[in-house]
Image (cartoon, rainbow, N blue to C red; front, side, top):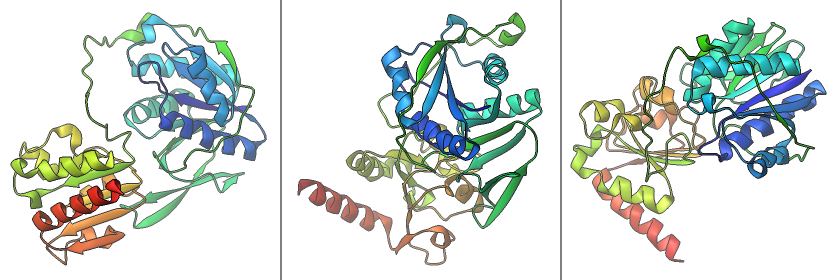
Amino acid sequence: MSVLVYTENWDGKFKKLSFELVSYANEIAKKLNTSVVVVSIGNVGEEELKKLSNYGASKILNANNEKLNGLNNQAYTSVLAEAVAKENATVIVFAHNNSGKAIAPRLSVRLKAGLATGVMTLPSSTEPFTITKKIYTSKALANLVIKTPVKIVTLLQNAFGLVEGPASGTIEQFNPELKDSDFKTKVVDVNKVTGKILLSDAEIVVSGGRGMKSGENWGPIEELAVLLGAGTACSRPVSDEGWRPHEEHTGQTGKIIAPNLYFAFGISGAIQHLGGISGAKCIVAVNKDPDAPIFEAADYGIVGDLQKVLPDLISAVKELKAN
Protein backbone atom coordinates (compact mmCIF):
# COMPACT_ATOMS: atom_id res chain seq x y z
CA MET A 1 0.00 0.00 0.00
CA SER A 2 1.22 3.53 -0.75
CA VAL A 3 0.21 7.12 -1.44
CA LEU A 4 1.02 8.07 -5.04
CA VAL A 5 1.75 11.62 -6.20
CA TYR A 6 1.92 12.96 -9.73
CA THR A 7 4.43 15.81 -9.90
CA GLU A 8 4.79 18.05 -12.92
CA ASN A 9 8.08 19.51 -14.03
CA TRP A 10 8.70 22.66 -16.02
CA ASP A 11 11.61 22.26 -18.43
CA GLY A 12 13.15 19.64 -16.15
CA LYS A 13 12.67 21.59 -12.91
CA PHE A 14 10.18 21.23 -10.08
CA LYS A 15 8.41 24.23 -8.61
CA LYS A 16 7.01 24.83 -5.14
CA LEU A 17 3.73 23.25 -6.23
CA SER A 18 5.37 19.84 -6.68
CA PHE A 19 7.03 19.95 -3.27
CA GLU A 20 3.75 21.03 -1.68
CA LEU A 21 2.00 17.98 -3.16
CA VAL A 22 4.66 15.63 -1.78
CA SER A 23 4.44 17.33 1.64
CA TYR A 24 0.68 16.85 1.63
CA ALA A 25 0.90 13.23 0.50
CA ASN A 26 3.47 12.50 3.21
CA GLU A 27 1.06 13.64 5.92
CA ILE A 28 -1.65 11.37 4.49
CA ALA A 29 0.87 8.51 4.37
CA LYS A 30 1.58 9.01 8.08
CA LYS A 31 -2.13 8.65 8.82
CA LEU A 32 -2.22 5.42 6.80
CA ASN A 33 1.11 4.16 8.15
CA THR A 34 2.53 3.79 4.67
CA SER A 35 4.98 5.55 2.30
CA VAL A 36 4.93 8.09 -0.52
CA VAL A 37 5.72 7.18 -4.11
CA VAL A 38 6.18 9.98 -6.64
CA VAL A 39 5.70 9.64 -10.38
CA SER A 40 7.75 12.04 -12.49
CA ILE A 41 7.03 12.04 -16.22
CA GLY A 42 9.55 13.58 -18.59
CA ASN A 43 13.24 14.43 -18.71
CA VAL A 44 14.31 15.38 -15.17
CA GLY A 45 17.87 15.07 -13.84
CA GLU A 46 18.77 12.88 -10.87
CA GLU A 47 19.69 15.83 -8.63
CA GLU A 48 16.33 17.45 -9.28
CA LEU A 49 14.48 14.20 -8.60
CA LYS A 50 16.29 13.80 -5.29
CA LYS A 51 14.81 17.10 -4.08
CA LEU A 52 11.45 15.35 -3.79
CA SER A 53 12.81 13.15 -1.02
CA ASN A 54 13.31 16.23 1.17
CA TYR A 55 9.53 16.39 1.54
CA GLY A 56 8.86 12.71 2.19
CA ALA A 57 9.15 10.80 -1.08
CA SER A 58 10.39 7.28 -0.31
CA LYS A 59 10.46 6.25 -3.95
CA ILE A 60 10.54 8.24 -7.19
CA LEU A 61 9.39 6.54 -10.39
CA ASN A 62 11.14 8.28 -13.26
CA ALA A 63 9.18 7.77 -16.49
CA ASN A 64 11.57 9.31 -18.99
CA ASN A 65 10.39 8.47 -22.49
CA GLU A 66 10.52 10.74 -25.54
CA LYS A 67 6.91 9.86 -26.34
CA LEU A 68 5.89 11.47 -23.04
CA ASN A 69 7.71 14.78 -23.53
CA GLY A 70 4.50 16.48 -24.64
CA LEU A 71 1.58 16.54 -22.23
CA ASN A 72 -0.88 13.92 -23.45
CA ASN A 73 -3.68 13.36 -20.96
CA GLN A 74 -4.63 9.95 -22.30
CA ALA A 75 -1.05 8.65 -22.27
CA TYR A 76 -0.33 10.11 -18.84
CA THR A 77 -3.48 8.43 -17.49
CA SER A 78 -2.20 5.06 -18.70
CA VAL A 79 1.21 5.69 -17.14
CA LEU A 80 -0.31 6.59 -13.79
CA ALA A 81 -2.77 3.67 -13.86
CA GLU A 82 0.17 1.30 -14.31
CA ALA A 83 2.07 3.00 -11.49
CA VAL A 84 -0.95 2.67 -9.18
CA ALA A 85 -1.11 -1.07 -9.85
CA LYS A 86 2.65 -1.50 -9.48
CA GLU A 87 2.82 0.32 -6.13
CA ASN A 88 -0.58 -0.84 -4.82
CA ALA A 89 -1.53 2.80 -4.25
CA THR A 90 -4.74 3.49 -2.36
CA VAL A 91 -4.58 7.30 -2.47
CA ILE A 92 -3.47 9.37 -5.48
CA VAL A 93 -2.70 13.08 -5.17
CA PHE A 94 -2.79 15.66 -7.98
CA ALA A 95 -2.55 19.43 -8.11
CA HIS A 96 -5.85 21.19 -8.75
CA ASN A 97 -4.49 22.87 -11.88
CA ASN A 98 -5.08 22.36 -15.58
CA SER A 99 -3.11 19.10 -15.71
CA GLY A 100 -4.62 17.68 -12.55
CA LYS A 101 -8.16 18.62 -13.60
CA ALA A 102 -7.58 16.91 -16.96
CA ILE A 103 -5.92 13.70 -15.77
CA ALA A 104 -7.56 13.00 -12.39
CA PRO A 105 -11.11 12.46 -13.79
CA ARG A 106 -9.75 10.14 -16.50
CA LEU A 107 -7.88 8.11 -13.91
CA SER A 108 -10.94 8.09 -11.67
CA VAL A 109 -13.00 6.46 -14.42
CA ARG A 110 -10.19 4.07 -15.36
CA LEU A 111 -9.74 2.84 -11.78
CA LYS A 112 -13.36 3.25 -10.65
CA ALA A 113 -11.95 5.47 -7.90
CA GLY A 114 -13.76 8.14 -5.90
CA LEU A 115 -12.57 11.68 -6.65
CA ALA A 116 -12.49 14.77 -4.42
CA THR A 117 -11.46 17.95 -6.25
CA GLY A 118 -10.10 21.24 -4.96
CA VAL A 119 -9.49 20.07 -1.39
CA MET A 120 -7.67 22.31 1.08
CA THR A 121 -7.14 20.09 4.13
CA LEU A 122 -5.91 16.68 5.16
CA PRO A 123 -8.56 13.98 5.57
CA SER A 124 -10.22 14.27 8.96
CA SER A 125 -10.66 10.50 8.97
CA THR A 126 -9.23 7.60 6.99
CA GLU A 127 -11.94 5.09 8.00
CA PRO A 128 -14.08 6.18 6.27
CA PHE A 129 -11.90 8.44 4.15
CA THR A 130 -13.42 11.87 4.84
CA ILE A 131 -12.11 15.15 3.50
CA THR A 132 -13.40 18.72 3.56
CA LYS A 133 -13.67 21.26 0.75
CA LYS A 134 -15.29 24.64 0.27
CA ILE A 135 -18.44 24.82 -1.82
CA TYR A 136 -20.84 27.53 -3.02
CA THR A 137 -17.98 30.02 -3.48
CA SER A 138 -16.70 29.36 0.05
CA LYS A 139 -20.06 30.01 1.68
CA ALA A 140 -20.27 26.42 2.95
CA LEU A 141 -18.11 23.39 3.69
CA ALA A 142 -18.75 19.87 2.45
CA ASN A 143 -17.43 16.72 4.09
CA LEU A 144 -16.79 14.29 1.26
CA VAL A 145 -16.67 10.58 2.06
CA ILE A 146 -14.88 8.36 -0.46
CA LYS A 147 -15.77 4.69 -0.07
CA THR A 148 -13.93 3.18 -3.03
CA PRO A 149 -10.74 1.15 -2.42
CA VAL A 150 -8.72 3.74 -4.35
CA LYS A 151 -9.17 7.46 -3.62
CA ILE A 152 -8.09 10.42 -5.76
CA VAL A 153 -7.76 14.01 -4.50
CA THR A 154 -6.71 17.24 -6.19
CA LEU A 155 -5.12 19.82 -3.88
CA LEU A 156 -5.53 23.58 -4.28
CA GLN A 157 -2.23 25.40 -4.65
CA ASN A 158 -0.92 27.13 -1.52
CA ALA A 159 -3.53 25.32 0.55
CA PHE A 160 -1.07 23.22 2.52
CA GLY A 161 2.44 24.65 2.33
CA LEU A 162 5.84 22.97 2.47
CA VAL A 163 6.69 20.49 5.22
CA GLU A 164 10.14 18.98 5.16
CA GLY A 165 10.33 15.31 6.08
CA PRO A 166 13.46 13.74 4.58
CA ALA A 167 13.07 10.19 3.30
CA SER A 168 15.30 7.68 1.51
CA GLY A 169 14.09 8.83 -1.90
CA THR A 170 15.32 5.96 -4.07
CA ILE A 171 15.04 6.66 -7.79
CA GLU A 172 13.68 3.90 -9.99
CA GLN A 173 13.47 4.00 -13.76
CA PHE A 174 9.87 3.38 -14.73
CA ASN A 175 9.12 2.05 -18.21
CA PRO A 176 5.34 1.75 -18.50
CA GLU A 177 3.72 -0.04 -21.39
CA LEU A 178 2.76 2.55 -23.98
CA LYS A 179 0.19 1.71 -26.64
CA ASP A 180 -0.49 3.47 -29.91
CA SER A 181 -4.07 3.97 -28.76
CA ASP A 182 -2.75 6.25 -25.98
CA PHE A 183 -1.48 8.73 -28.58
CA LYS A 184 -4.59 9.46 -30.61
CA THR A 185 -4.03 13.16 -29.97
CA LYS A 186 -0.85 14.65 -31.39
CA VAL A 187 0.67 17.83 -29.98
CA VAL A 188 2.05 19.77 -32.94
CA ASP A 189 2.99 23.03 -31.22
CA VAL A 190 3.43 24.38 -27.70
CA ASN A 191 3.24 28.11 -26.98
CA LYS A 192 4.37 29.14 -23.52
CA VAL A 193 3.87 32.48 -21.83
CA THR A 194 7.29 33.96 -21.06
CA GLY A 195 8.56 37.04 -19.29
CA LYS A 196 5.83 37.11 -16.63
CA ILE A 197 4.79 35.25 -13.51
CA LEU A 198 2.15 32.66 -14.29
CA LEU A 199 -1.06 32.83 -12.29
CA SER A 200 -0.69 29.15 -11.41
CA ASP A 201 2.67 29.92 -9.76
CA ALA A 202 1.98 33.34 -8.25
CA GLU A 203 1.74 33.65 -4.47
CA ILE A 204 0.60 37.28 -4.89
CA VAL A 205 -1.87 38.35 -7.59
CA VAL A 206 -2.84 41.90 -8.59
CA SER A 207 -6.14 41.94 -10.46
CA GLY A 208 -8.32 44.58 -12.10
CA GLY A 209 -11.92 44.80 -13.22
CA ARG A 210 -14.17 47.09 -15.20
CA GLY A 211 -13.53 49.80 -12.63
CA MET A 212 -10.19 50.32 -14.40
CA LYS A 213 -12.37 51.79 -17.24
CA SER A 214 -9.88 51.00 -20.01
CA GLY A 215 -7.05 48.67 -20.93
CA GLU A 216 -4.89 51.76 -21.28
CA ASN A 217 -5.15 52.30 -17.52
CA TRP A 218 -3.39 49.06 -16.63
CA GLY A 219 0.04 50.63 -16.09
CA PRO A 220 -0.31 50.99 -12.28
CA ILE A 221 -1.58 47.39 -11.98
CA GLU A 222 1.51 46.12 -13.81
CA GLU A 223 3.81 48.41 -11.84
CA LEU A 224 2.46 47.19 -8.51
CA ALA A 225 2.75 43.57 -9.68
CA VAL A 226 6.41 44.08 -10.58
CA LEU A 227 7.15 45.70 -7.21
CA LEU A 228 5.51 42.80 -5.35
CA GLY A 229 6.79 40.02 -7.60
CA ALA A 230 3.17 39.23 -8.36
CA GLY A 231 1.12 37.86 -11.21
CA THR A 232 -1.52 39.97 -12.98
CA ALA A 233 -5.14 38.93 -13.42
CA CYS A 234 -8.50 40.33 -14.43
CA SER A 235 -12.23 39.69 -14.29
CA ARG A 236 -14.10 38.16 -17.21
CA PRO A 237 -15.66 41.41 -18.53
CA VAL A 238 -12.13 42.82 -18.86
CA SER A 239 -10.89 39.88 -20.94
CA ASP A 240 -14.12 39.87 -22.97
CA GLU A 241 -13.56 43.54 -23.82
CA GLY A 242 -10.03 42.70 -24.95
CA TRP A 243 -8.40 44.94 -22.35
CA ARG A 244 -6.32 42.01 -21.06
CA PRO A 245 -5.42 38.57 -22.45
CA HIS A 246 -7.78 35.69 -21.70
CA GLU A 247 -5.11 33.74 -19.82
CA GLU A 248 -5.40 36.36 -17.06
CA HIS A 249 -9.13 35.81 -16.55
CA THR A 250 -9.85 34.40 -13.08
CA GLY A 251 -13.22 33.00 -12.09
CA GLN A 252 -15.40 29.92 -12.45
CA THR A 253 -15.07 30.07 -16.24
CA GLY A 254 -11.41 31.12 -16.12
CA LYS A 255 -8.51 30.20 -13.90
CA ILE A 256 -9.16 29.10 -10.34
CA ILE A 257 -6.30 30.27 -8.15
CA ALA A 258 -5.34 30.18 -4.48
CA PRO A 259 -2.61 32.78 -3.88
CA ASN A 260 -1.51 33.90 -0.46
CA LEU A 261 -2.53 37.50 -1.30
CA TYR A 262 -5.06 38.73 -3.87
CA PHE A 263 -5.59 42.41 -4.75
CA ALA A 264 -8.92 43.24 -6.43
CA PHE A 265 -9.02 46.72 -7.98
CA GLY A 266 -12.35 47.85 -9.43
CA ILE A 267 -13.86 44.36 -9.29
CA SER A 268 -17.48 44.25 -8.13
CA GLY A 269 -17.25 40.66 -6.92
CA ALA A 270 -19.76 38.69 -8.98
CA ILE A 271 -20.29 35.17 -7.70
CA GLN A 272 -18.55 33.73 -10.78
CA HIS A 273 -15.40 35.71 -10.01
CA LEU A 274 -15.44 34.87 -6.31
CA GLY A 275 -15.67 31.20 -7.25
CA GLY A 276 -12.24 31.44 -8.86
CA ILE A 277 -10.48 33.17 -5.96
CA SER A 278 -12.18 31.60 -2.94
CA GLY A 279 -8.97 29.73 -2.12
CA ALA A 280 -6.99 32.97 -1.62
CA LYS A 281 -5.68 33.27 1.93
CA CYS A 282 -6.08 37.07 2.02
CA ILE A 283 -8.16 39.33 -0.25
CA VAL A 284 -7.67 43.10 -0.42
CA ALA A 285 -10.42 44.95 -2.31
CA VAL A 286 -10.54 48.52 -3.58
CA ASN A 287 -13.85 49.79 -4.95
CA LYS A 288 -15.70 53.10 -4.87
CA ASP A 289 -19.03 51.32 -4.27
CA PRO A 290 -19.34 50.53 -0.53
CA ASP A 291 -22.03 47.95 -1.33
CA ALA A 292 -19.91 46.00 -3.83
CA PRO A 293 -20.18 42.23 -3.12
CA ILE A 294 -16.37 41.93 -3.18
CA PHE A 295 -16.24 43.49 0.29
CA GLU A 296 -18.17 40.55 1.74
CA ALA A 297 -15.34 38.22 0.68
CA ALA A 298 -12.46 40.62 1.36
CA ASP A 299 -10.28 40.49 4.44
CA TYR A 300 -9.39 44.17 3.94
CA GLY A 301 -11.37 46.72 1.99
CA ILE A 302 -10.81 50.30 0.85
CA VAL A 303 -13.79 52.33 -0.33
CA GLY A 304 -12.32 54.89 -2.70
CA ASP A 305 -11.27 55.88 -6.19
CA LEU A 306 -8.73 53.30 -7.34
CA GLN A 307 -7.09 55.91 -9.58
CA LYS A 308 -6.02 57.62 -6.35
CA VAL A 309 -5.57 54.56 -4.15
CA LEU A 310 -3.30 52.71 -6.60
CA PRO A 311 -0.63 55.45 -6.87
CA ASP A 312 -0.63 55.86 -3.08
CA LEU A 313 -0.21 52.12 -2.60
CA ILE A 314 2.63 52.00 -5.16
CA SER A 315 4.41 54.86 -3.37
CA ALA A 316 4.01 53.08 -0.02
CA VAL A 317 5.47 49.84 -1.42
CA LYS A 318 8.40 51.70 -2.96
CA GLU A 319 9.09 53.45 0.34
CA LEU A 320 8.93 50.16 2.22
CA LYS A 321 11.29 48.46 -0.25
CA ALA A 322 13.70 51.39 -0.03
CA ASN A 323 14.00 50.87 3.72
